[in-house]
Amino acid sequence: MKKGLAVIACAAALVLANGSLAIAAPMALDVVDGGKKMMGDPVHGKVIFNRCMVCHTIQPGVNHIGPSLHGVVGRKAGSVPGFNYSVANRKSGIVWTEQKIYDYLKAPQQMVPGTKMTFPGLPKAQDRADVVSYLKQNSP
Ligand code: HEC
View 1 (cartoon, protein in one colour):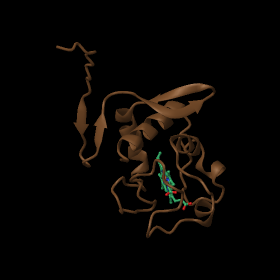
View 2 (view 1 turned 180 degrees about the vertical axis):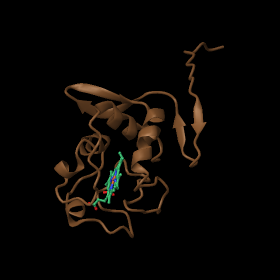
View 3 (view 1 turned 135 degrees about the horizontal axis):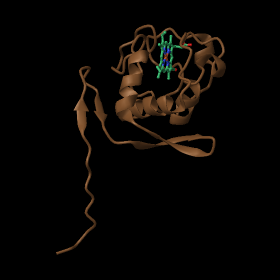
């Protein structure tokens, strides 16, 4: 019998009221801030995402004041069908990598001057990392 390395994965999965999944394990992100690689906690990210839900959903094709954020990680800016983006967003040339979303959320109007996203941003670095990890987990 082969003795392999026993990897014990211990993750508490919570199915949240809106059907999205948050797994309670911090994840490594492709995000660097001040030379430091960031980790994200998707469960706390879900709590932060409540602020985004005033305008966004993560359901595919469901646009509100803001476009659906389903699959946003890796998506081209301004590419959700049926959402009326600002010219600033559409022409930004941004691809929403984890790093770009993280940077954008600090002060959206700074990265995309003229954006219609009237959200002042998340000043706390860890809040941004956590919400990115939540989006990553829910953006297959
Ligand atoms: C007050 C409403 C509002 C809130 C709150 C808000 N957004 Fe937005 N968001 C928008 C709008 C409107 C746009 C479209 C921007 C444009 O066209 O200029 C947008 C665009 C975006 C985009 C770019 C999407 C794309 O397809 O190009 C991302 C990413 C995003 N929001 C993430 C977030 C996250 C994460 C939060 C919470 C931390 C958040 N937003 C909070 C209204 C909001």
